[in-house]
Amino acid sequence: MTATWLWPCVLSLYTALFWLDGGICGQAATHSFWLAGHQLPLCARDLGLFGGLLVATTLLAWIRELRWRPIWLLGPLLMMGDGLNSLGGGPLYQPNNGFRLASGLIAGISLVMLLLPLIPMPRARGPLAGVTLTLGLLALVGLFISPLLSGLSVGLAGTGGAALIAMFVVRLMGGSRRLAVVLIAPELVGLAMLKQVAIAVLA
Image 1: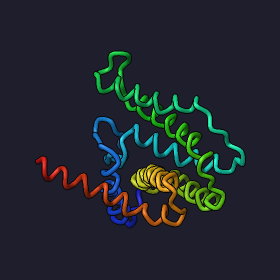
Image 2: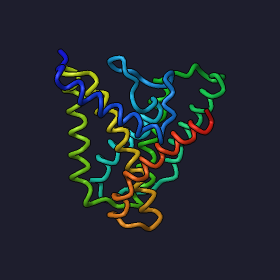
Image 3: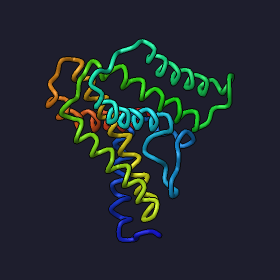
Image 4: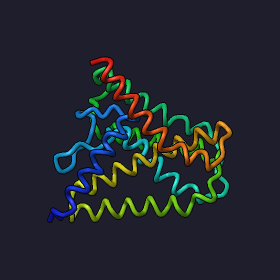
């Protein structure tokens, strides 16, 4: 059952999110999942990468002693290999969105295992868990109220993962936690605007 009163608001937010995520994702229609006739804001691989990073960070941030291990570098390498196979037309196996999602998910979890030991996040545990849980519940509720609400929640989870990567970069460069948070929105909006400028110039 669709809540018609909710549709305009969700659709507007969805459109804005799709534009924002355009700066961090190519958003190829054939490489993306669709829900209720709408393309998800992130392609399958980026959805796995950023969504997996958000969920993994939420869970692993509670582990006090997380050791950095080189083996976790295999995750991003696996995603790169899947991307090259897809780019080459599938010489090793037939590429599909399931493989793209899985390789992105593994890479996202691996990145968390690589970065969290370098950037402790004790104060962010509670809020991060609250955000992730809320998005998960909205995605489930949306299946009964409005499928687009589920798509919006999933897209926001992916965007949240991208925001975490932006925070990690600032922290690794020596920036404070407050500066990392303040720069999230300008970074994402700036990337989206750069993409629109590039499209206009190349058109």
